[in-house]
Length: 250
Image: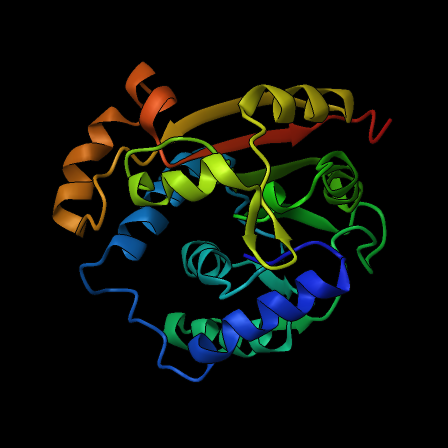
């Protein structure tokens, strides 16, 4: 996950990825919370995952999700991020998953791609770092072909069971890192924005009712709460998927 186009945020995220990019990428087949969450996200995409074409991850960070997508379907993968160390880590994720992945340096507010260039456009943990997410959503929908799939997962600045220890910071400040903003917008704002942009068949699912420092076994048990009112109240993140209609961006 990476930050918006503010230069201070870019630098903050790039430094945050330095240690990760110098480390070995966690294998995708070991029991871990990260691998459990990856599987939850792929399961939510379900039949909306295209079986051919091109896929773009905006603000890719480690590009774990994009690599997973490429392992599940024969898509041409493009990972975009402004942080050089994130793109280095994306290469390691691609190698770990055994998939080819093109990397691109770019800004989520001005994606360097033609209209309708992709069959799947996704982001993970990106949108909450913009004070106004609508311009980023508009760019993501712009480069999505009619009938293509939009996917995002969002970690809002709000109470959740998993982030209980972070609650004092959440109540005190909207800054996750120096220069990195974290919004509190919930699913309704994203749904309404995507509907205005011409998406339909929109699905939203709250997830991640995990106690702090959960392992994969406990998280798997807690996954039974995904999509329930308990997840709406105590979940760590939410996922949203939709399809672009023929009308395009308005």
